Amino acid sequence: MKKFNISLAVAAITFGALALPAGAASAADLGGWQEGSGAYSTAPSELSVSEVAPFASVRHTGQAEEKVVSGTTNKRAKGWTTWVGVYHYTTAQMERSGSVATSSGRQWGTNGTQAISPWLKATPNLGKGSARTYYGR
Image (cartoon, rainbow, N blue to C red; front, side):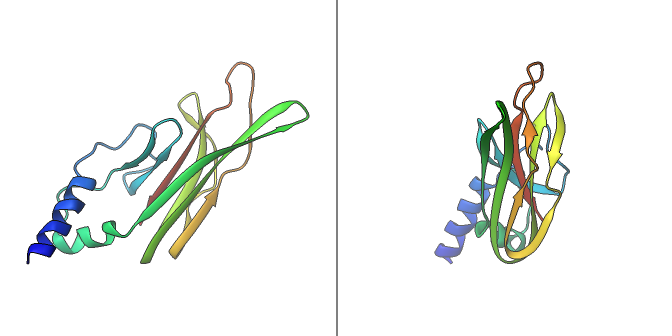
């Protein structure tokens, strides 16, 4: 019984009530990664014990990649989610000026998923954009 309470306490602390971040693709997104600020979770705190258990096993990472083509910087987002035994999705997107500029769309699978957004060309007026990834089920 003690071990169960400790696990539940860790899950509750890790996935406490958080507001859906600005720019989250939808309320179905349970977490993700944002360039400059790192990982976050939007899992609701009112989950039952049976609903909390799957969140304890999810791992999500994201990164931004850049390359220069003909003197112009191009950038894309990449995301990976490992969630053993759970059908889920990963989405990678580039955002610029508060809007989605490019998106991988939801990449669905069980156990592990990867998403890579299309390259976004930097512009003098709008810059390079910001990479962001999401996961959910």
